[in-house]
Length: 299
Image (cartoon, rainbow, N blue to C red; front, top):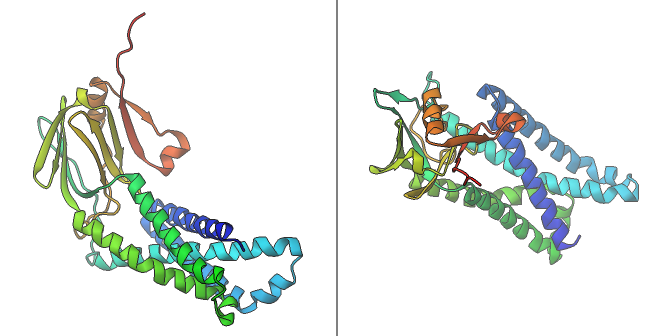
C-alpha cells in the first residue's frame, strides 16, 4: 500500500471515531450517551479481536476486488476504535471526579435590576486550534505507524494482527492527548459574562472589558457539546472561550445556560440579529450566532 492512501485511511478512521464520540456527547440524557459509547466500544473492540483471529481466512476467501476495500476498512477501524477508547477514558475520568450522590449542575444566570450574569471556566482557544490538535494527533499516529510499514520493518507476527497497530496507535496517541489536557487545565480561566440592556462585560481572571452592544459585530453562544464556547468580536475585543476542554469545579458541567429572552431582545435592539444555525443543524449544534445588521446606504 502506498503511503498517501495509507495515511488517508488512518485519518479517515480517526474522523469517524471523532464523529461518533461527539455524537454520544450530544445525547440526552447523558446516561444514554454513556451506554451507547460503552456498548459500541465493547462491540467494536470485540469485532476487531474476532477479526484478527479468523479474519485472514475470510479475507482470502473474498473476491479480489473486495479484498482491498476490506483491508482498508480494517486499517480505518484502528484509529476509530483508538479515539473511541480515548473518549471513553476521558468520560470515566470525569465520572470518577464527580461527587457521590450529586448531579452535575449547569452554570446559572444571576439576575439583578440592571442585567444578568453568569460565571464559568473556559480556555482561550478557537475551534480551528482544537481541530488542529486533533488532526495533528491523527497525523502523528499515522506517521508513526506507517514508518515501519513503508520500510518493511514490521515483524511477520505483527502483520497477522491488526490489534498490534491498535495498541501502537493508543500508545502513540495517549501521551500527546494527556499533554493537551494538561495544557488546557493550566490555561483554564475564571470567566464572568454580564449582559445589560446596552452593554456586555467580559471578565477573565479579574480583568474586565466593557463593550457596548452596539459595537459588537459578532457573538456566538454555544451552550453544550464539544463546541461549547463563547465567541465575541468587537473593536475592543476578539475572544473565543472554549468550555469543553477546560478544567471545571467538581459537580459543574462544561455547559452554558441558554440565553434569556430579554438578553436576546437587548441584542436585537442593539442591531444584533440571530443568523443561525437553524433546522437540523441547530439540533446537532445548539449555538446562538448573532451578527450586527449594519444599516444599508440608501440609493
